[in-house]
Each structure stands twice: as structure tokens, then as C-alpha cells.
Length: 119
Image 1 (cartoon, rainbow, N blue to C red):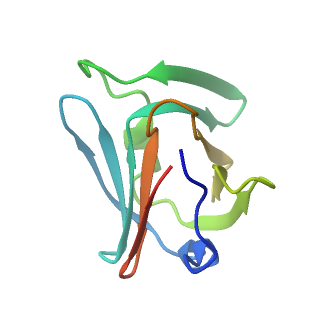
Image 2 (cartoon, rainbow, N blue to C red; image 1 turned 135 degrees about the horizontal axis):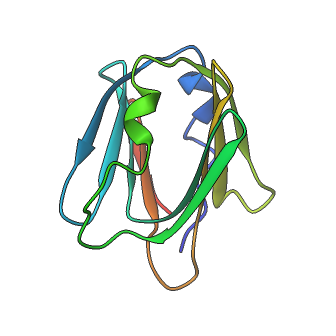
Image 3 (cartoon, rainbow, N blue to C red; image 1 turned 180 degrees about the horizontal axis):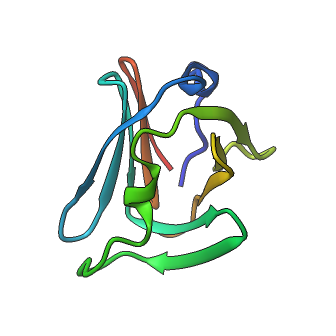
């Protein structure tokens, strides 16, 4: 697992809207305004209002996980932890997506502009 490099400007996600949520057999990809995306393969937590759900491994995806509710939502804030391997994305309308890197496996990939990092 590698941290998100400093040359990837996660702050640039602010004010972008979720335009697509795409499901594959072993990953979910969230697209932002045609220039950025996050592909999730492992742990994430999603909070919509007061409801919070955690998912630890995405294999054989067989449901929505509530991520379709992010469609059209705008990014309000993006936070990284001190190790730059966990990221929290806060959206409008009281929604939050938490992504956590893992020592053994790549858990998510972030693509911002022409920069990409596997965490």
C-alpha cells in the first residue's frame, strides 16, 4: 500500500458532482465531472443522513451498497489522514464516503486529472 502522493490534488474534487456510479464484478467506480474518478475494491463506509454502513471487501458485487444515492451530489470537502492512505469525501445533503487503504491489498484507486494513485 502506498500513500496518495502530494502531487495529486484531492482538493480539486471540491465542487465536482458525481456523474456516474459504475459496478463491475469486483469494484465500484465513482466518476466526478468527467475528469476524476475513484475505483473502490475494498473497505469503505457510506453515511447518508444518520445511517452509516461499512463494507470490508468487494468481491462478487451483488448490490448497490447505497452508492447510487451519491448521483448528482456535489463534493463539499475532502480530507486525508496523516499517512495519506485514508480519505473522507463529504458531499452535499449530509452524505459522507470514507475510504481506507490496507497494508496487504490495494483498496482503492484515485484518479484526478492526469494523476493516479493506488492505495
